[in-house]
Image (cartoon, rainbow, N blue to C red; front, side):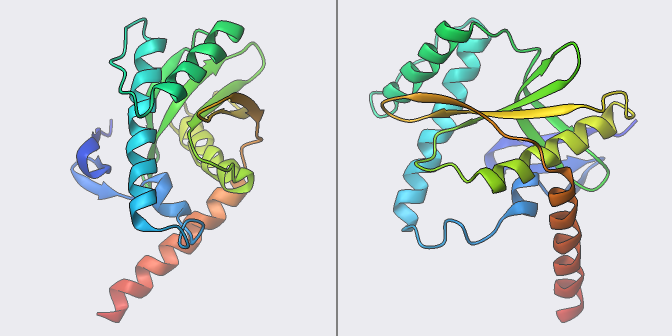
Length: 193
């Protein structure tokens, strides 16, 4: 049985002590290239804080709120008040022998597995999210020996003033294409030195 480790401070996954790429690394592109670094850094801090707070809420704990991101957490609370979902898994690391990722929420329905991602971005890039969810679905299926075949996806999109629940079909084929491209780049980088 393989042992997976996640080092949160560096966002690094180790499989049996060997670094493997994350879903985020594999699907990385130039989507955010035009955004100034300080804005991306602030958005990343907010996203991390809101994720942690929403996780605590779903675990029945009280999060410590910082005024700089409290509105997003309030929106998550409003989402939960309306839907009252008890997720089966929260912040779960999934992996294959080639990559790993942490899916935000998982819910086992009677006829499908629902993978839910929490987003705090100013815009939803649905095609990119579909590929991300596809990676999670592929890894989850791999870890469960193919026992689950029907995956659905969704995003809980939090902004300062509202929340939206957006269904997005996981794109496994799109993810596998990105994985193949990633491997090709890595081989080219190894040869170039």
